[in-house]
Amino acid sequence: MHARSATPDDAAAIAAIYNQGIEDRVATFETRARTPQDVAAWFDGRHPIVVVEDGGTAIAFASTSTYRPRECYAGIAEFSVYVARGARGRGAGRAAMLALIDAAERAGLWKLVSRVFPENTASLALLRSVGFREVGRYEKHARLDGVWKDVVIVECLIPANLARDARSA
Image 1 (tube, helix red, strand yellow):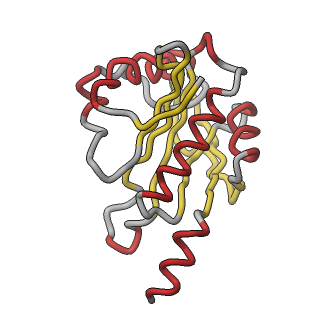
Image 2 (cartoon, rainbow, N blue to C red):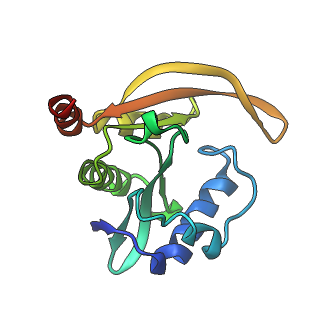
């Protein structure tokens, strides 16, 4: 198992993994399956995306996207991590997140943020293990299949980029 930067050629594999997450209804409010073309649009040249492969097959991915459009938030990115059903519990999510944090540091980001369903204890444990902290909870954040769901807000600071920005201020 190894992690690497994703390319647009990985869009179909990423879409397949993400669509499993959508179907499972434990990790996203999204309900519409994504096409490889939808995923290809994620590659904006600014926000890192990584895949984890096992035997040449993508089994997990982690991606970043714009947090907010205001310039003051340019160093913050939202992130997602998904693991193919058959590969869960084997460390692929951890490998994806460690690679994503490294890629985010290289991209100059100073913080990664996301929201996680409280019942998704595996994801919360994974994120704690790689340096994320829980900073709050949004109650009744959105509905999934007609049911209100809360989310736990998580963040990870990237110290090297915080220190660099402080020196240049």
